[in-house]
Length: 70
Length: 452
Image (cartoon, each protein chain N blue to C red):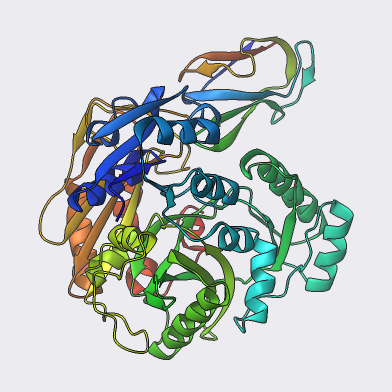
């Protein structure tokens, strides 16, 4: 199981993947926006995206859990 | 002269405009979002008006709400700063229709120059050199592919509207173009203020310098050129460090660029402060027009340091129909610049990958000393939020020559302590010791080379 966590304070701009999707390493899961920059959050492992813990429009803090890949 | 100015902006630029407005004996009114309530620009104004929530759409970009603020505070003039509503012709017109003074060029000049395609065509007709590129807006990929085939790769792909380098990209082949086109289209829709995607393709010049000319259109119609700024230190096509004079152009090229910038301003009857951005091929000592910014530029302080002219003061005087505060010789010659100035943008971002790093400011110790000017938007205890751009402060230095400016910049960066948000001061220190930068012989690829 791999946890995907936020590297910075950001707004969740777009959820790209869906729970239950099979993802490969490097796939974009969600796109964050911080300071007028779009920051894609990528899968660091291949697996099944078992849950997405954020919603579009959320403000997330550094270290917050974004998704879990199993 | 009007008696009050509403500053429709935030952070360092709002604070800097407030300073000049108040020094002229006028009342400074600011508008702000919830996230910015504790920032210095709010506290230092004579009056502050809360616009709304933190997202720009609910605050600084909410034109109806800003106009309401003007009405409720009794503001007589509006200074838009840069970004946000600064190049919004509809807003400028609405300000004027409300009986207020708009501190900026006419809405028609903003509209004609704000669209990069239109501006290019206009400049070409005025005899200002432009790069090979599209003369009509490109809206679908098929058109882009066809145009690129005609122009020849590599091409620069950008949104016709909006600024700040957001969404710009270089395409070296058809696959790259598809990707760059998608990025630019998305940026056009998100940051361009609506109107659908219109894309511009231009021949990309390798190893170019980005050099811009500050112009000032006076109330009597005279257009002055106040020297150039070299803005070739960029990451993600956004400026990080600027200097004047440019170490990469000869006096002969400078003279041609300044003359072209004056022609550009005259072609649209330009009033107020504006910037003609150019790309310079240093090897060939030649240049092409890039775009015109119809507003005060972030990096205007370097011009102020070498000319001794307060550009915001001139903007206010021109908007009021009055003469500028410095002598203008017949024929439009302005003052000769003195010494060398450098601006380092202190961003809330990590110094390696330049990713955003907002946060609460725990330590903020500003450098001070001869030749140092700091335009900052924050003080200790403030929080840099993710809602706006990452610019925290502009560290500017002035020296008798480039060597002295560099040495003052190194000392100032070393003395500047920021803790809390991530910041690029370590990058600034690295740059000031980088052999290529120090030599003066650098181009817009410098930062990428430093990080590869």
